[in-house]
Image (tube, rainbow, N blue to C red; front, side, top):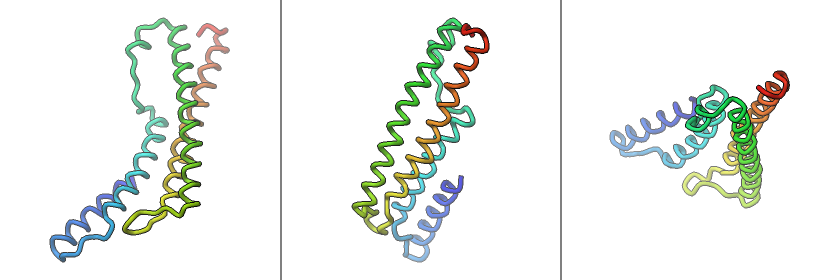
Length: 148
């Protein structure tokens, strides 16, 4: 929410500065883009925590209980694999950006903290949440004698 609020402030300052004072905020597009990275990557993790992630229930809603649990486990395991790879590759990309000293064009803001933010605070958090989901799925199965 802070990143979204900051984007609004930058947009207002840029518009007022350009129209009234003939001086727009330097690098406002870059600032907005970097704030979007923070807002979107944080939003992914929070949507999973709040249970607001996209869910396609066409097959799951019509499946029998045992098949449904198996498909849910498969979905969680595949999602874990995807987000684990995304986290690892994002972290490696952040280290590459740091080694090269890559920054934005106008303001020269280093890009590596944003790549590492996405890898650690979004992808890694999603991995941990998916591990919890998997443990819960199998704990429910074991508690019900393997046929929940």
